[in-house]
Structure formats: C-alpha cells, structure tokens
Length: 212
Image (tube, rainbow, N blue to C red):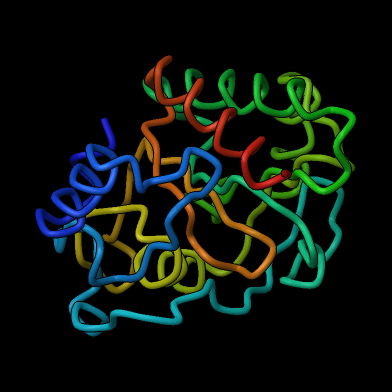
C-alpha cells in the first residue's frame, strides 16, 4: 500500500536500496514533501525537500484539556483524522488505532492523536462519550476537536493526510483513511492505510523500529 503515498523517484530509490542490501530494516526514511505523491502535498510545499516537521498546534481533547506539541514532546505517535458520526471507514480506523494502543500499552513514549474533521459537531462531551465507548485510554490517546481551519491546515500542510485542496471553510470536508507516523523530532516516518490489516501490521513494526 505504501506505493500510493510516495513519488516515483522515492519508490525507485527504496527498491534499489533494498535490492542492493544497503537498506537497513532497522531504519525508517524521513519523509519530506518532495518524497511524497504530489497529490498529497499542498501546492505551496511541493518543492520542499528537507527539514519538514509537523507545525505547532492547539487542540482540545476528550477531557477538555489543551493539547499542543508539548503534549507529544519526546513521543512517537500516530495521527489520524476522523469524525464521530462517520458510518464507513472511521469505525475500522478507530478499531485499528485501538490495536495500536493495546500493542504499546506499556510504552509511555508511544501515543495516539485523533483529530475530528467535523469539530463543530464533535464537542468535548461528544468526544468523551465516543472515547469511553471505544476503549480509549486518556493518558495514551488524545481524541481532539478545535478550530476547523487549523485542523484542516494541519491535515494538508503538516501531516499530508489528504489529497483534496481546500481552505477549511464551511463547505470544505476531508475524509481520509491515512495514519501518519511521527517521530520524536516531529518528522513523518510513515503513511499507512488505516483500514488495511497489512498496513496496521507494518505500522506496528515501524513503531518498534523507532523505539529501538
């Protein structure tokens, strides 16, 4: 599934490195905008080929607490975008995030971040009920709401989670199955299909690589 997230040049380099036995299974690439499928990258960032990191953010979690980059300082985490009323891919994604939560339940440096794409509907009380029903552990997994334009800007310019361009306005709506793996330096280390069982196995393995 990884091929749909990367540009052709990056895929070629990965294949060549693997075939020559120079690509170590104990290392993960750091992804910059120029490494990714251009459809995933905001037009303003297409030519950026180094030093990309997730921008600072300000969100509110299921307990009404402020969530910022400081919350994830020195943490490895998975980010996804969802909404509580989603009847299709979101329940699958949430179940798979739960698998990741349970796999790393004893690793304090591994966390999860879910951002609502319908923050006007997903209030703190709605998120709290959702989190309780899904088995979210508060200290491990932040299910968040916030300003819509801010969240959509993060999706498009920091996490590269969606293909569609937009302004985060009233008519703008994103719907993506992507899970994004972020390291302790706020860098993207992998993008996965959160509905695909093989990709979930891969992200779990990749998190273990980062832990080591």
